[in-house]
Image (cartoon, rainbow, N blue to C red; front, side, top):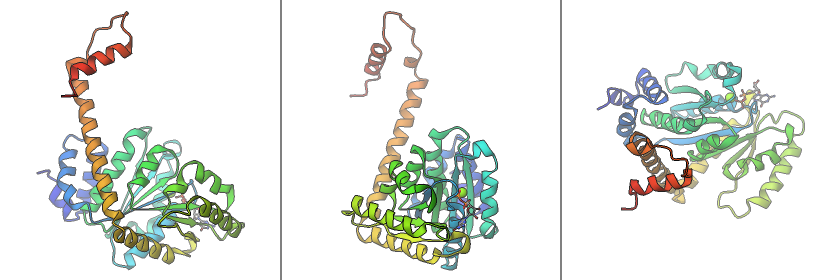
Length: 307
Ligand SMILES: Nc1nc2c(ncn2[C@@H]2O[C@H](COP(=O)(O)OP(=O)(O)O)[C@@H](O)[C@H]2O)c(=O)[nH]1
Ligand SMILES: [Mg+2]
């Protein structure tokens, strides 16, 4: 057994941190740890919070977490910030905004920077979510900027996706482009203390009605002022309502099965790549008469995957 498994299952904070570091560093026996934790990862509610930079996602996450704590629920937070590789300060900023929950034992916060390695990030973020779930957190929140494939993958790994928009900047159009419209279970119009909030709300509502009219769950639009704690209670209730909906309609089981399948395939694909790279086949002589396509076909045949 992995030396951290038992401690993580008991919710030991330092061991949780160490386990996540092992995953981040691709440490050799991280997969052993994840395998042992897996049976305990299915109970947590997974929430994805996404939207443009500066929309108030961290502020909202902070307030939402405080609300969940009041309901007696423990919370794990994974903040993914692709901008931090440029500014270096974004993560610290998130920490400062989350100070109210930083010293609470029922809360675990982990920031993950992309450090240019976008490909592995979504995988590691999801695995970090599994560690937090296994450590007994009732709720796992992924905070991520709503752009790019990696971020979409992370929110798709959530049961409930909250898309945060702000009145200015005509985000409704942008949101449609980046696919945010389709993945949202709940829309939050944050900074609704700002001018244009009502106009934006009406616009978004009419766009949604056209595009999503046949959905079984029609995403509500909630107005919030995260910095003033306004609308947070309603958001909490909508998230719980969406969870009930998922359970009632069997969609939760369906989502979990999908995740299970994707994960299994991902492990196999990774192993296949490793197997090929370590095999003699990957180490071939170059013949100028042969195209890469021919060569690849030849090697794939030798791999004998069809038997
Ligand atoms: N006026 C106003 N400012 C807000 C609101 N929510 C957050 N902010 C501020 O917006 C800035 C960005 O917030 P942050 O949570 O870091 O956004 P993130 O990049 O989406 O995580 C901070 O200075 C917040 O204090 C709000 O509802 N109204
Ligand atoms: Mg943030």
